[in-house]
Length: 415
Image (tube, helix red, strand yellow):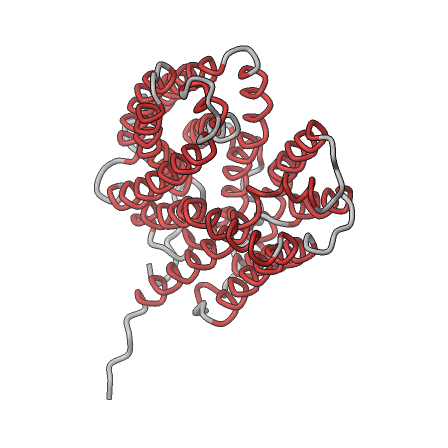
């Protein structure tokens, strides 16, 4: 008779299931998001391109902004009722929203669905809380790297396939495909995720930390600020990249879209590789010290980006920045995972995800306004922001002797 499989294999299997479900979900998002402006223009009857741009920016911004406020609430519920159930709830919302987008008749209908997604979504925060809760604490970095890598890689491969589907079967039908992908992610979590006695046990927050108490912990606050500012820098690139490439090409915009698409995809691949590699290294080296290195390197990479004299030079340095930016985000989430007590893991990751979502919402407005003055100023400001983040981390975390949890965290059975 075969010997029973070690319990360790269950959490490893569940890691892969959660990561694959997150990847499939974000492929669905990235499948259609780049073409939302065309959908507004062609299918929803908005003729004025300035109005299209206004609606597109608002629709993109409203979802992460609302998600930033709703994320901690859903995280708190996850701490009470279980992380898997909250991941399934978020996936069900995504299925409804993505499929519903295929049938909207006005931009106001689209707005309603995007608002609903912001209020009821949160799959990334819940997935992060789930995967780190089932992973031994010393391997938190690896778990975070898997999730971050899955998200980044989806952005590298999905837009190209999404464009082919939209042009082949139609934009409305492409939303159906996106909804079907979300259904497959839901089925994966429902039937492939292996429940154990530990994973079924819902953590009880009881008298856990409040928002104010958690933010007063220096290490957690430092991580929160790092995620907000690094994400804000990362989101500064894509919206204005075609314009900057046109500038580098001497005003010729004929190939700007092609070059920009290649750079965006290459940078996403770089972020994916960085997240995966840094996540593994975080089990061997102190994440705090590694974060110093990636932030310093990111700051230095922004300088030649702002001074680039050719598209090739700009693209190569953008890829270099991606290698370090992906590592910085992964390390920040890893540090967060080591200081958040188990009983409020969903709440804590909800807050950290809120930091990235606020960065997503603020970046287009801030850097878009700056781009109206000078495109190079945008990437110059990126270097300044990285310098501020580095100084903040050195000031707050540099005084800590080692990476320590907020409090003594009880180790669950089987860890």
